[in-house]
Amino acid sequence: MTMTLDLTELQLVMDGETDIVIRRDFTHPPARVWRGLTEPALIPLWLGEMKRCEMDARPGGAFHFEWEAFFFWGPILAADAPHHMTHVEHFSGDASYRVEVTTDLVARGAGTRMTQVMRYANAEARAAAIAAGFTDGLDDVYGKLEALLTAD
Image (cartoon, rainbow, N blue to C red; front, side, top):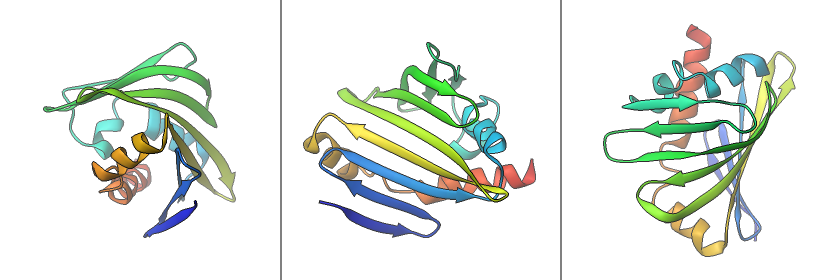
């Protein structure tokens, strides 16, 4: 089953039983978008104030994003700056939560198309992520990233 939801500038598609595909265009080149997605000094400016923000965006590296009430962490499986990264994401609030996220940045004229594929273990895990509000605010945070890249 494929279902598409329009979220202003962001496209979100439920693909197959386990995947969520997110697409968004940015008005900046891939290297600039990559910087916004991977530099620890920039990430909290669009993803929200954090207690801890670590990102080592290279194969064998890891990330850790910690807010007051929860955190996400995981290993970086593959990276080819500024075009591709695959990482595994774990969530402090649910020991069973595991999602593999692949992010691709492709130049489109002077801008970039970001495609993220979030692959869950099964349909139930994906449904739980959606029910927990995964899509809530997604367009807003990527809008903040666009604004940050424009101001930077």
